[in-house]
Picture 1 (cartoon, rainbow, N blue to C red):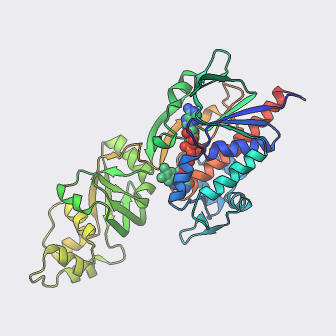
Picture 2: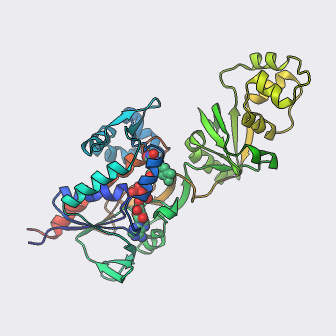
Picture 3: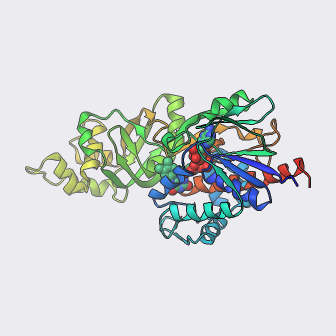
Length: 404
Ligand SMILES: Cc1cc2nc3c(=O)[nH]c(=O)nc-3n(C[C@H](O)[C@H](O)[C@H](O)COP(=O)(O)OP(=O)(O)OC[C@H]3O[C@@H](n4cnc5c(N)ncnc54)[C@H](O)[C@@H]3O)c2cc1C
């Protein structure tokens, strides 16, 4: 009997989830991965503690996906944040909710979860082919791979591609699928950095502060306000609060050529109180120690303040400046170092099972699709959920191609 055959390309979280869903649905599953080992970016996420998902209610959760929220709503309903936690627990990785509402495995690692997952796939009969780089389709639609043994062609009843974005390309997702899928007739929005740092034309003075955090600050850009922290780098600013604003900052730079970021370095202190403290006689103190002692600024905070232009001598004006430091962001700091990728295959080309409407039998999942989200577990949640939906639909499609 010919068992429905599903080929999965890409062994990141979306591909592995698609493989699991297809195999559980009864398909014969083969995974093709171009790297010598699977899920390298997932393992890298584990280095930061592996923020698997977020504990907020689903209605609020879906709003984090911006323009793609309605599209993702039904997909996330098929694999919810609670199901993500159950999934991890079933592989021996209990999770907990951190103070920010983010969900992590208690081990703060990705490797034990990945090991258990791969073992399960193996027991289900899933075969993982490493060093297989998808290069395109032949005239009959067969999948072509470059392997160390030369070119190989694979014919399957259905295929799920989960090839990732294009950041951290050394981990495998290099975006080289883009021209191949464009040539196959798919519309792809340009790949752009998301959850990334931004370049600022710092003075050479800032080099000494690279790596220093700006904690408990309030950031404002394009009508968005949030509290958090970021890190001074040689090129500009990066870190959680900047990542959270990255999509609006990126769009503003595309529109206006630059974006203005306003930082309140002391959001919990009023201008009046700050002005009173700054009005105290400075004596022989340097400006930096005056700012540190009177206004509670760190050395990085004082340095960023100075980057915003000549400082007023009047205490009231200086207090106002501390609460609204304006910085000019000139560009996103490149796709390579971004946490994730915006853009990708346009969602309108997919049906509800994530099959490409113009190419029956080809399903897509994960970060290669045109959605983006901030950090907080939203990225992995959407990759897992879309992998599950595509994997189940691919198995059903394959079964229809090869009736018992
Ligand atoms: C440093 C870092 C930390 C992160 N931390 C978190 C976090 O804590 N929480 C969170 O939600 N998200 C986090 N992310 C993001 C998250 O890891 C990604 O969104 C997720 O891995 C994307 O899953 P994916 O399966 O779509 O793609 P990927 O994980 O990128 O996997 C795609 C796979 O496809 C393979 N591939 C690509 N092209 C080909 C080809 N032509 N042929 C064969 N194989 C191919 C790649 O080698 C890769 O293995 C982090 C990302 C980074 C870089």
